[in-house]
Structure formats: C-alpha cells, structure tokens
Image 1: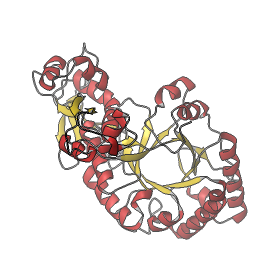
Image 2 (image 1 turned 180 degrees about the vertical axis):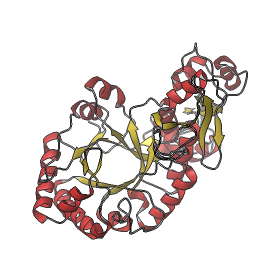
Image 3 (image 1 turned 180 degrees about the horizontal axis):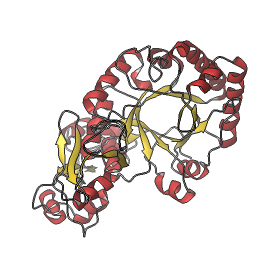
Length: 428
C-alpha cells in the first residue's frame, strides 16, 4: 500500500495510472465519490498488487521476505503454508503486497452506543477488544445500565472481546465527590465490585476498563488499593482488568486530572493501561493538532519507562476539530468532525490541505459563508501511520481508538496494511 498526497491536476484515473492499479481499487479503499473532485493536499491510500515468485535453490521464506520487503508472516498467511521449512525449488508462491511488516498488534475501540442499526454498522473485525462507553457508578456503588447489546453481539461475530467500561461520570463530567466517597468507604467499594462482577457475568464481558478521573490527588493510594481489590476478585474468575490514564510526561502528583493516576502502580496492578494520548487540541481550547506526534511521543516515552510496554495501549483519536477564528477563551467551542467530513469541508470551501511536520498532522484554513475564518485540524493516512510506527517502535501492546462513530476508512486500510490483529477469542 502507498500513501499518496494529491497535487494540482490529479484525478483518480491519473493516480491509478501512476501506480498501475485499477481506479476502482482506489475508490473502494478510500470510500470516494467518483463524481467529487479531489482536494489538493488530500491523502489517498493506494492498494498495491501481489506478484508470483518461483522458489530458487538456497531460498528460505525468511530471505524471500527480506528480498521483497514484506513480512514472513504475510507470505505464510497468503500462501497457507503450514511448515515454512518445506518450500522447495520450482515451487510457485505469492508475494503479497508490502504489508503486515510491523507484525502483530492488539486494538481496542471505544463506542458510545446509539441505535442498534448504527452500532452494527460501526463494529467490524479490526478490533481485539470493543469497549462500550460507559456504565457509570452511582452513589451506592451500583452501575447505570447501557444498551450495548447490538455492539457487543456484532463484535462477537468478529471474535472481538467486549470489555465493561466503568466511569465516575455524573451529569456532564467526571465527579470528584462521587469517587472520593467510594474510595473512602469499603462497603461502597465492595458493593461496586459485586456489581461489576454481576455485569461481567450477565453480558459475558471479557474484562473491565476502569476510567476514574478527577480523583483528588490525596486519594492516589486509595485508588491503587481499590484496583488491587478488584484484580484480586476478578483474576481468579478469568477476567482482565485495564485502566484509562490521563497523559503525562513525568510522575505528576498534583491536580485532579493527573495526580491520582499512578503510572507505575497501574502497570504493576492492571493487565493493561489505556493512555489517553489525545485532546491537546480540544473543543474548548486553542486550535492545534488533537494528537501531535511530538507530544504523544513524550508521554509514551515516560509511560514505557515505568510500565511494561506490552501492557500499554496508546490512545488514537478518530476525529478532528473545526475552530472558528479568532479563538477566544471561553468562547465558541470547536465542532468535532471526522476525516471524511474534513475532506468534504475543504472541497466545499476551496481549501488546500497542508501538513505540519512537527505534529505530523494535517490542517487547513477556510472562510465560511458569513466571512468567518476557520481552521481545521484532523487525522489522515499519514498521521495515523506515524502513530502506528510509534507504537511499534516502543513495542507497545497496541492502540485504543476514541471512538467509533465518524467514518475514517483510511485508518482501517493503514492498520490492515501494517499489522496482523491479535484476537483473544479462540477461532472455533
């Protein structure tokens, strides 16, 4: 697969001729409308083609893979080879398009359940885990219900393991008083753990993700102790336990968002952590990339120094924002938009998409019908490719998407091209 950046004069046909592929393959891979013009600066994923190769004397699958720049696993998979040592001179094998060079990865996808039809359409086979968001803790340690049956059942059809998401959200935000009361009361904690167990069993979840935020920093060790109790209860029952952590570049011990999140302790206690490496650019803040790679790298560098890398999921946003300028603190919030809407908006207003090399993120400016200036930061094939490379460089367990909803076909194409997706539900 190639990632191509559109320049002036390009068309789907001219790009297909440049790469020697069928135009329909480009249209399908990028979910393009062939009647719409391309946008200068827009990225396209261009599928590569397979080729045949006759095994020569002295060949091994390893040196064939190295010669053609593809992974050993991809050759074994596409040729259905059960014993790599049994290839022989004169044997014809298929050399896959350059893909899967980064090996195996686990992925988690959050989804905010909506209608059953919508949820079924959003869930596919690209995830190891699916986490419907969220069951909220109440004052007595109960959990609010969540209508996630369509998402969970569809996921199982793809061997995607569902995870129970538990948060301390109350109303529109994470509730500091609520979680403080829970962590200060052993009876409430026991009741909460009992209710987590009941929910896990009732819907056959594979485990739980605890996402407690805005915890008073003085309760840091009490939060760690709660997680120890939860793990001690769930591990003998075969469930996994993960936590969601705010991004930080050193052990910040103050502030309600960061202070109580003890990276080292979570790495010791939990089976995995999801680090929410996004929202540098957020709807109420100044315009910038949502997940700038230079900032994400700083967080992952610290996280991997205190948490085993094979326990870390790096957060990846599937969205961007459209800010109205000038930005005024406390003023109009930015609109969240997906990759396809960002491209459509650039086309509508005649904008050229630029790419910031420091943050490894695309952006553009435009003027709307009311003569107001806007700036849009979003994700494209280039930016997600860099994030996947970062995950591979540090040997992370994988990535976690926030959140399924807005179409972003290129992300799934890049993911599939670079990695094999691990599954924890056995193939039957």
